Image (cartoon, rainbow, N blue to C red):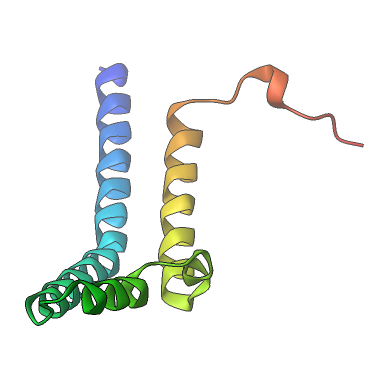
Length: 101
C-alpha cells in the first residue's frame, strides 16, 4: 500500500513538472507563430531572386540573437526545468561528483 502511495506521489510530482514545462513553452510557441507569419508574409511579396536573398539575410537568426532577453529567459527556464526533471529521474554517475574542498 505504501508503494502505491509513493508511486502516486511521484506521478503527481511529474504531472506538476509537466504542467510547469508546458506553461513555459507558451512564449516560445508564440514566438514561433509570429516568426512563421513574418516569413510567410515576406515570401509572398518577393518575386525576384535578389529580393528574396536580401529578405533571407534579414530573417536569418544570428548567433547573437540568442542573447535577447526573451530568448535567454525561455532558454533558462527550459534548462532549469530539464535540470529539475533529470535530477529527480536520473541521478548523475558517482564519477561526476567532485569532492568538496
